[in-house]
Picture 1 (cartoon, rainbow, N blue to C red):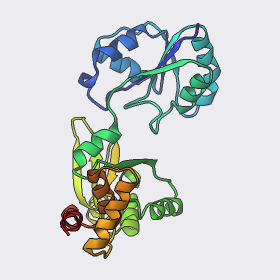
Picture 2: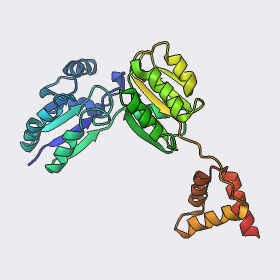
Picture 3: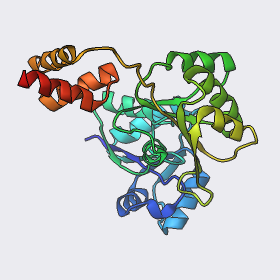
Picture 4: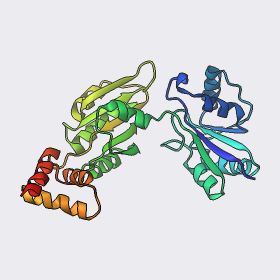
Length: 279
């Protein structure tokens, strides 16, 4: 019988965000693989939980070296709890290699879901969140960072990045150069913590603000590209919607697809469909 790998969502800053399931998981796990042992013991102390299992470090520099031992524990039927410093493991944090190895070994992988800086930043950014992509950390080298941003210039989904405070000003300036000075963005700093700050505005304005120096954990949210409106008359718009419906889309989804493709207001497309129906 194999054990079970549990991914625990650690609080971003407030221990009070932790629910009873994670408390039990910390107290009952046979092995706790953690990014920082000091943070684990501080969290356990805040939660008034006693850690009874074996604690091993599991961070980027030892991630692969720890795999054999953790897989052996799982093969013996142990429960292994994986915790990073904050948020969900494997989301730009250690964890993916262990998750993949456990799955390949036929081990059950489950989670005690918790906070995520990605979705938290999206929710408070004030930017569209119906579609988004997570790009993790931008490259540290300026040339590679600019190339990555340039490749994302036409991305229509809202984008989420992690960035270090000392590179934030340069990253915002490079983003403004790639996306345009006026592209809407939000810098989310120290989410859920005492000094939480969400600064919203155009990229160029945010770059000027960040040039004065910024501290803390940073999550950057940038609005997607807005396509230039396509010039189509009412008849052509109605035909586009009809083609979507013929492919199996509902009327609502067909109109939405044409709106996204053309960049035209939904009312314009809807009116074209109504006019074609009445003709």
